[in-house]
Length: 592
Image 1 (cartoon, helix red, strand yellow):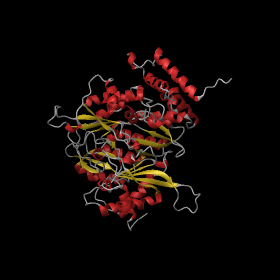
Image 2 (tube, helix red, strand yellow):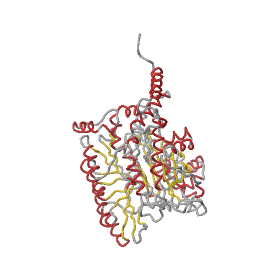
Image 3 (cartoon, helix red, strand yellow):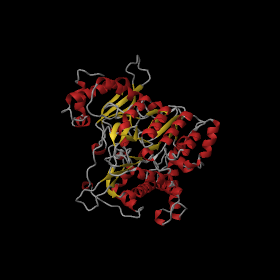
Image 4 (cartoon, one colour):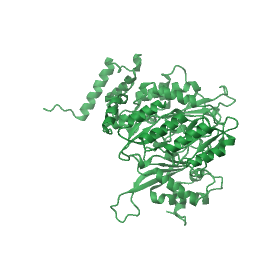
């Protein structure tokens, strides 16, 4: 007789065993109601046991985390590097907890993702990252859509050399990947923005260090994003985060003192077509970290450990509802959450779509900040060193990365702006950009990501160069190129969003030709006061035809808009998609 159990029988036995563990008080399995203080690993052990007790089966990667804590693999990484080997199997995932991504087959090497709160680097750190990229990577870095940097093309023998070099610079990137809290973003102009309600620098730093020093926040059900928005000129895109803190000012006629507070937003994940929603909670600045920590505890205890597709915070909120979730959050706090109507807060000051590029005044009298335009976020090591030197020579010694994949130098004397501009141009960079290039965002794409269906950065630069030659626009338009459904470039919030896909080669001589890069086209997305998920306009446009199709779309906008002040987003939102398609099909100058 066989002793093997069916899958259904095995799941039943797992559930029974888990229930017995909880009932009998197995260490770490007794539940929060027992009044015990849980050790960091017990939080996750309990959550896994509860999932199995309910009849669920842990996902493969959740099982991998259960079998080995990702923080315990340093010796294995060192031995593998000494052999000149890359990771295989579950180790590929586990190494992401150190910010190390083995990105084959796109590149036979590692990408190292950093983390620095608010994306504000000292010149020393920026210069040091450049040196690491030169010594162990491809000689360049990418600015990401989370105010961060990535080093690419790191060889099999060098990942720990990069990590130790970062640690020496004071850049601790534990948790920069895998199921952890990612880089804490904040307003890039924190402390120098004349429009901001509050400087978010210290909050981002406090949140960053809180995460690093609470091991229970390693190995969450899924990745987790937190952002602080100051109410300033350049948005932190807080609505796209799992937790967003938005600075607000109470109106004069309310019971709260007239000073800055933060609204708490939860559940943003625009790749899944959802923005973070206001919870009705109003926080003092010094309450934010504690509340984020409480949210994380509820999430790690109750998030889905059985399906990667529904493991983000949004799906727990969808299952429970916001009020039951917030009631559970309250249990982890020593103070009572303050409820306050959003209608009793002043409206946020307008975001400046091009406030991250060019020359602008800052809060400090007589000083300017200068936004440097980067070719879809790419900087050579020499350019990084050059910018670090300029930040020291002309500015405050800081380099501020933005969610728009560029760098800002602050503290520039008005009289030195022209000289600084000349030196930036000598590095092969610029501070002025067209209305198209200023809002151009592109993920890494198939150049360096195994998930991407298209070479996004290449096609982004190609499309914008074509449009700049053919069109003149009076207002900024954000165009977001993302390579896959993970939506790292957040195509759903772009005025125009492009999602990479594989399409038949329109120039192929036979049906057996390999597919080529293509894009699905989305329109009308937005963020902040204009937030909206973009609608599908057209699917499967070959990349070779994309510049012409975008030209056709923007030409139709200019021809049919109500007046020169109407924005592209306002134009497309007042038309049904079918009407826009008909408008384009009827265009005699159809470029595609």
